[in-house]
Length: 442
Image (tube, rainbow, N blue to C red; front, side, top):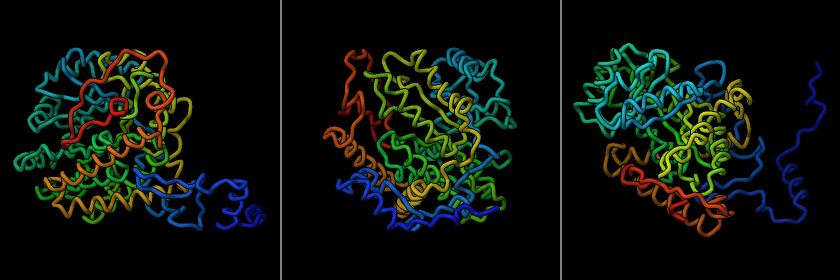
């Protein structure tokens, strides 16, 4: 077959730039340049294979960037349930399963009656995650559910574990590795972190867990199989895709240094969660668009599971039937009608996405190294460093919205003429940082 590309001359980078200048018709070149002061990313809105850090083949040269568990981009549609009353939480979970949810995430704040909580839920078939605050709750769940329940996962943060906890946990996980330790990027992202601060924090957290588990008798392969990642979804579509791809590359780089025996150990298991920072209770219908683009960025980046939270889940009026239904339906529509699950890493090879992936990866790696130099994420100095850095970015985000350098429909521009009577409830602090809610801050 004739190679069609041979019939056309290949435009150089300069050819491209000259054509763009011509199309601007005398307008400033700043129109096609991006200067993001918050993310500290400065780049042209166009990219070319001969310019800068745009390696088109990065997805093929680093297999971990795709993070493939299967020959497609399928994901779990996850719902989060905060457990205050076990019976109510159980009824909510069963309703979610009937609405199309395929995975459950229970936030367990206190000792729990596991039988009541999971009555009628076949946890051996439904991927079920418990967010627990301590080892005692973890072992209580294992005792009830049987340690061989392979679809049972946990979210425990390393900062909550003592030396004795690590010893007990490692002994349990050595016989049955399971996802138990979480690197909670979502929490810092919701406090205002940049993409690279979020990735750097997750790498430091995951590395701390990896070392602790290996020092307590697990191999690299076993330890890595016990660590997973929660990422938040920001508003900058391509940034979020680059962020997750960068996380995969850097986590593989860390794990590879410990010489795992299985190549699959390099893969990162990632759950994407939409948050509340840029959502509006006063102009609720703008949230549907924000949630959809956030979900798309997570799914195009290839997360294992996605949790679209109802935008009003933490409000005085609580989540409505409509917001709950939409939160569940967005991933379903993207799968059943848009077929986003069919192609692995669909944006891999895009010069712009590869550029952002590389830029975010470089900045995130520097952040990770800074945290390690301060003693790792368990060090108070390291926590103070990341907290101060994130708070500075949160302040800058607020200033840009207040000065109209940036805007949010329904919050800073085009307010809803029929304002809703609904208010935000308080959020828990994370590492001393406050949850960033633009609607409250502006």
